[in-house]
Amino acid sequence: MDEKASALTAAKMAAGFRAADMVQDDMVVGLGTGSTVFYTIERLAVRIREGLRISGIPTSYQTALRAREYGIPLTTLDDNPILDLAIDGADEVDPHLNLIKGRGAAHMREKCVASAAMQFIVVVDEQKVVPHLKAPVPVEVLPFAVLGHDPAPRIRLYSKDPGRGKKRRPGHLGQWEFYCRLFVQ
Image (cartoon, rainbow, N blue to C red; front, side):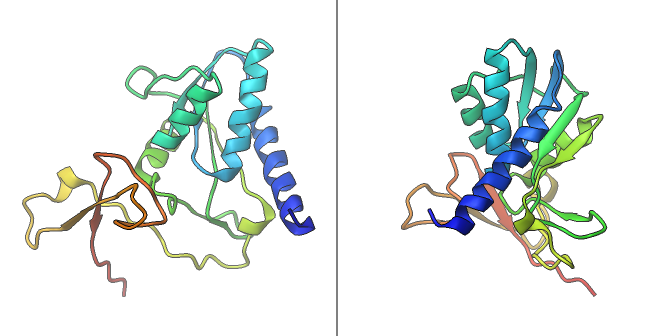
């Protein structure tokens, strides 16, 4: 690993660990999705082994798998509709702390968990800080909200097979994406 990559990894780890150290006993914590939050989960696992008692609500299937692997007890928004804290990353952050989130394919779940939290912590490394937001803004269309409308949306199932579907975001059965055109004037 070159020096720049090592520095970036160290920054991600520091941000993730700092967020995990803000978690207190008996909290219900939203567990975000992404490379920086991976370090939050890693640190929470250590703290749980040391006696910390928490419940986590994952924002993605991948986060749920990782949290289980690390021994973090999980719960749901149905059982805990109010969270003490949610920790997640962002795709871009400007100097005014405006964010672009959701390009990692967990947008709706991230939004639901963040909205249910009393406090929301965004962990980012310096690579995500930009002078002006310019990344594409994710738009998620929920299937139950558009079915039966004309024109009908096109549906595409993500595939784990790199030769099919979107190569960038492997999914699992039942993960659907609706493609729509959004025009802003």
